[in-house]
Image 1 (spheres, rainbow, N blue to C red):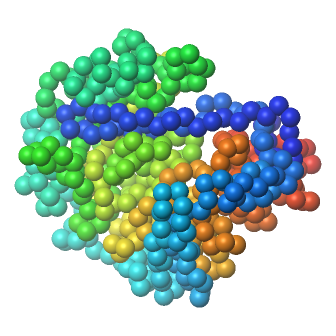
Image 2 (cartoon, rainbow, N blue to C red; image 1 turned 90 degrees about the vertical axis):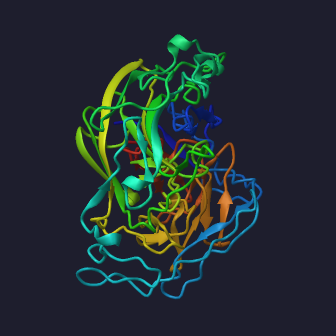
Length: 480
């Protein structure tokens, strides 16, 4: 298969896609703000990359490799595990003043059956019994006739109601205030829910089955542009809160780690044709870049791997589309979101039931039990699998001479620079940051490029592809 490559050599007729703005959408009946997970999804394949031979250096950026570096300066680093005597990432200032958050110290790798417990409290698979005697079992969250889950019905204090929302309905339950209509689209073209009804309070159900019926819109272009308006036409969802205060009508957070909860399980009778994003919302991610972390999240915004029947999710399975690791100490809500696409609208009917909080260890040993390091990130760039501080961007994890380091926040524009021991920020025309990979140094690339495809072709020439399934062939000067 032939693809288009981004290169470190100058190319004429370059097309660089700008990132769209994220949108705040208010959900009805205490749902808070619904994310805009599709707003920054790549919609077209760029015709090439503005990378320049040797590149120009932006303020605070890295010369060469993909052209201009970031002009926004440096970011604070999420501290990495020192490991074999290495130093943790330094804090750095700039871009909002994010600061370093310290390092995760370990006494060494896991050993033997059952695993060793690091000094930071990370226990290998098989080494932990669930809190409260629920090892290998779970807690079913049972709603009442109105869809309310009361904290008196479960031992960990989860409390909140089920609700539904869509881009075609505003916070007052009217189509006139829907984000889709406010974006300039007729109500007839927007996503809608007919069950649960937006005109009535509560979420009636039968036998604990929370059912949704509606239509996910066909995404239209933003009025006056040729850009698909995923921001205003995000789809529809049903959800429940983990810690809702019915007196103050505000969302709180649930500390799943402290409760010994390692994941969540649910049943679904039919998967919508468009697919779903099973999201776990935490503070700041409902309207943040890319939306909340979700099951199977990745840069291409794939659907969650939902299948009819029972689905089990452990916290390490959930990640933001641009790398933000899930912090299970700060859970606000769980959303079952039907996504939209540009080809056509799609009707959906599905029911969620038997939502259960898991108390058994992650079968792959990815549990993080230290409250200082609640986020699990897979190993990459010389760094092993490990637990990190809240706010870490797992895509930026790197080992710098044995010290694990990473950047904070969810963004494609950040990478950790081992030379300066800080996080650098890329900017247009090359906003895509990539960590060092093998003999390819860290640097900035055109939007939409996949870092995993970057190849060293010798002589200071580096190439990458805009399709993660392809790889670059130096001799053919093409992606296959």
